[in-house]
Figure 1: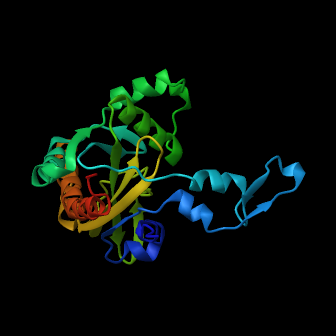
Figure 2: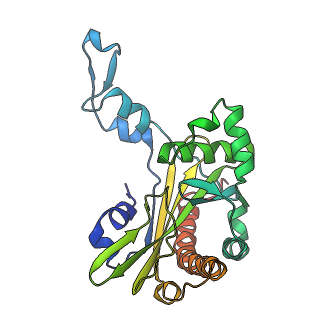
Length: 263
């Protein structure tokens, strides 16, 4: 089983100081995973007749998910800012459109609308007052919006930036697949990072991850007026996403080889 290496890149301080770029895919079967464990009876008090040995009921339920990726497909693209789904800027949308144009055999790519996601979320009985920046809530909001747009799987991405002055880390966005924020801080050196997760809309199967970094020092050293700051922020964000796209592209190519069209 291939496991995404992004967790190490975005969770360890040491990783922030070094290069981090790559992608991973997952194609494993939940049934095969659980079948590798011998079933044994559980005590009557457990409320279940049998479960895989060494795995509790909750883990077994989570593991029992199967990949169902098909090409060409109808895929969504969702952008996260401050833990919330946000519109994709034109500059970044052009980068994703370029990927789709280079690989028409992959299928169609559609931006996930924050308004549609909010409507779908409320239709599902989720209160807007319960909105939070935790990973689970945002992922589910995106999946509901993608389902309303009849999308098969969705690529969720975010960008973040770290800044250093002397040897100390001054700030880093909470980049954990969900929650990344771009920090326009006056610094001496700065590095941007981007992370993406490609997940099945219907069952939550994680097909792959991708991550990339970029040197943003030149952007951060020239913050000026609020307008200039906004322009520089958009330019820097595009630079980070521009480095992420090739990793996402390689991820899709590997997935297409792993999931060939049915004869």
